[in-house]
Amino acid sequence: MGGKTMKKGILTLAAIAALGQSGIAQDTDSPGFKLGIKVAPNLGWIKSDTKEVEGNGMAAGFTFGLMGDFRLGKDNYALSTGVFMNISGGNQVVKPFTLQTSTTGDAPVNVNVGVPAHEYARRYQYVEVPIMVKLKTNEMGYMTYFGQLGFGSAFNISAKSDEYTLTTTTPDGFNYSEYVAEEKAKHSDETSPFRASLIVGAGAEYKFAGNTAMVFGVNYNNGFTDVFSKGQLFLSNVDIKDNVETHGKSHYLELLLGIYF
Image 1: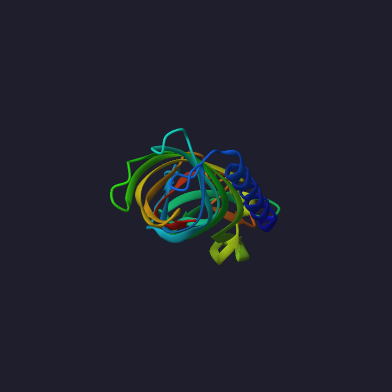
Image 2 (image 1 turned 60 degrees about the vertical axis):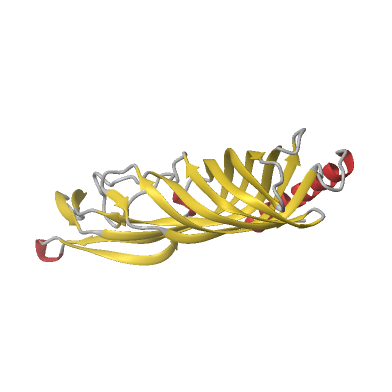
C-alpha cells in the first residue's frame, strides 16, 4: 500500500510539473516552475504527553523525494511543495512505577506489580506532502538565500517499536511477573495514520548554469498531532487495571540537500 501511495504522489507531482512548464509564462532565467530532487538526513525525537514516559535521545532518519517550486508573481516568492518518503522517530524510556493487575484462577485478586525502567526505540515511515511559502532574496552572484514557512501532511505507512509483554503467573499461590521484550515489533495499529506539522526552514541556492541549482539548508518539522492511537505501554496475559496509554508528538531537524533542474 505504501508503494502505491508513493507512486501516485510522484505521478501527481510530475503531472503538475508538466502543467506548470506548459501553462506558465516564463523566461530562461526565471522559470514559473522548478522541479528537483531532495535528500535530507534528520535527527528526530518524541515529546511525551504521558507522565510515566520521557524522552531518551534522538534517532537518525532521512527524507528523500521530489520537490517543486511554483513562482508566485515576482522572483522573490514561491509556493514550495513535493512528495517525500520520510523516515523518522525517537527513543523513549519508561520511568519505574506501579500498576495493578488481576490474578487468574477461581478467586482472582488485585495485585500491585512494580514496573522497572524500559526503553523504546520507535521508527516511523511516512509519505509527506508539504505546502510552504518561500521568500527569496535577489540573486547575489550565484547565490540566492531563502526562508520558508508552511505545513506538512504525512500519512503513515510503517511503524516499528520495541514491545513488552507482561506475563503474570501464580504457581503455589505466589505471584510471579516477568517482561518479555520484542525488538522492532510492528506498531501500525497503535500509530495514528495521519501526522500534521509546522515546518520552518532557511537555506540557499547556488546556481550552476541555466536553471540548474544546488539547494542546501535546514528545516525544523514540528509535529502537532498525537503520534499514537490506542497505544498501551504493555501487552499482558492478565487484566491490567490501570494500563498506561501512550501519547506524544514527534519532531525532527533535517539538513536539506538537493538540486533543481
